[in-house]
Structure formats: C-alpha cells, structure tokens
Image (cartoon, rainbow, N blue to C red; front, side, top):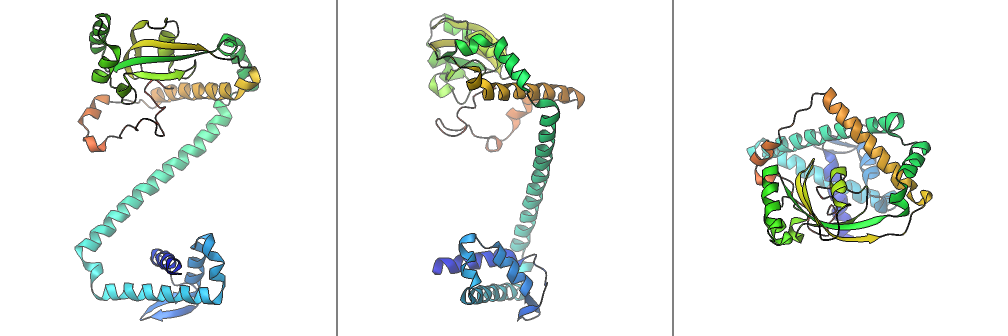
Length: 306
C-alpha cells in the first residue's frame, strides 16, 4: 500500500502543473480549485496496474486526498516565496530549455520518419525484379559464400598509412601496431581484428581489397570514407550455399540501403553540403560520444561497416 501511495502521489504531483480548472470544483485549497475534470485526467494517466484500484470508491477517495495534499504543499511553497527564489527560477528555465530542445528533436524526428517512409515507397523500394537480378548477377556470393576474419589499422592520412605499412613490412607485429596507432576505437584494443564478415557487410573499397588476399597476406593502403587502412586477412571459411528464397530479405535490404546512399549523395550536392571534420578535434572530450565497450550493443558498428 505504501508503494501505491508513493506512486499515486508522484503521478498527481507531476500532473498538477498545466491542468486548467475544467469541470465542476471537487475541492478547494484557498483560491485554487481541483475540478472533477482534473481528477479524471489524472486517473486516466495512471498506469494500467492501478486503474482497477482507482475504479473503487476507496481508491478514488485516496487519490483525491493525495491530490489535495500535494496542492496544499504547492500553495504553501508559493506563500513562502519559493517560486521567487533564484534556484527555483533557474531550474524552471533549464527545464523549459530542455523541453524545447526535446520538442524540436521530436518535430525533426517525425519529419524524417514521414519523409523516409514516403521516399521508400516512391524511390527506394526494391522490387522483386531488382532482387532477382541482384541474385543472378552475384550468384557466386550466394552459392559459394565465404566468411572472412581480418585485422586492420585505420589512420586519418595516407602519410600515416605509409608509415604503418613500412612498419608491417619490416616485420613488426600487426596487432601491436594496431593497438598503438589505429583510430578504430572498436577493433584497436583487439589488435585490429574485425569479423567474421561476408560480402556485402563492409564498405565496397574494404571488401575489394580483403577478399582477394590470401590468409596471412597484407594489403596495400586502402582508402575508404573512414580514412586509410592497412589490412591483413587472418582467416577464411567456406559457408553453406544460400538459395534465392533464403537470401531474398537480405538482398532487398541491401539494395534499398544502396538506393538510399545514392539518394543521400545526390541530396548533398543539391543542398550544397560542406563538412569540416577537422573541427571535431576541437570539441571538448566530454562532448564526444563514447565508443561502446566490446560485447555491448553497437559493438558491430565498426568504421568499415556499411
């Protein structure tokens, strides 16, 4: 019962602000009214687990008593001038600012959701013919699929990549170099290891370089959208063949993602997009998103993933 009281109290207190005096007054605290409409709205906002309790006369009486008690505290706080204190005003201003930010985020998120849905239906949708054609054109990838594990060292410039390649060719341990200089926060701690992965999992430039390698062989310098890589293939395994029906859903998603990527590149030109990635290094460390720990959600999103 104590838990019920606490929850009901918090629900009421959270709902007091912004509820206009609608309906017939059911209680008065000085000049402030608690209306039947206000009580009805608060009851509707209660969690489903408490709804049945609030249909009883005892539950509704307890609920109203709690609402009155909270209202008394609010009125007493106003009389004491708490609402005029700097601490209170600052907290309210900060809350309003945060709510405004969240509201803007919601508006933009809704815009994106509605537009992408429309865009998918008009331009991005992969037809059955698209999927069938892709399977036919890449049949070897499905009838003789390979699974590869590799290590890579990612650096921001070609000059740094050249130095990395020199160190690897001179016989230095690949994993040791990756831990020292790779800017991939996910794989660096594992000595640069990524995978296992199949064709279509990684960005095309990376795949084009890694799949032809022999196990143990090191690539040249490979440039992708993420920077410059030096790659070493460490394992390759043949997988069971996949029929068209087994691969259909994956192919459809892959085609639609590629269509969206192409649309995005076109939109960048249309909207004259310019990005200064150099500014990232000037951001305070605490403002930068932290890399997920190994094994946590997001671990698979490495800088070579599509």
